[in-house]
Image (cartoon, rainbow, N blue to C red; front, top):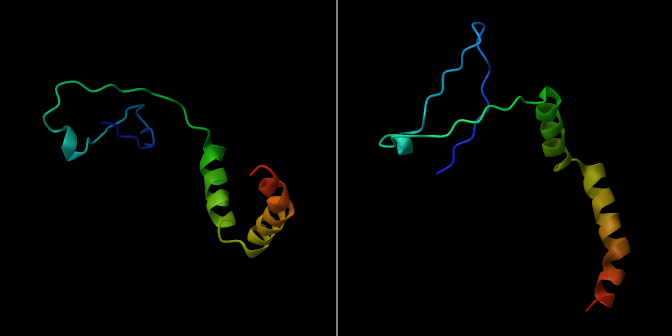
Length: 75
């Protein structure tokens, strides 16, 4: 089982992790601490917005159209 979640470090430099109930009877878990690039969350947010941006979707459709014939040559 894998559980991944990003947490904020508290002022006292401690971290409290509440495990999901599916870990209730586990005797050991592995914890890996990795610093998070704070810009990453912002980038992910922008990518999610792009998925509904009309201009971005139009550009993707145009690129798809441009390469549609080339893709058919492989078949």
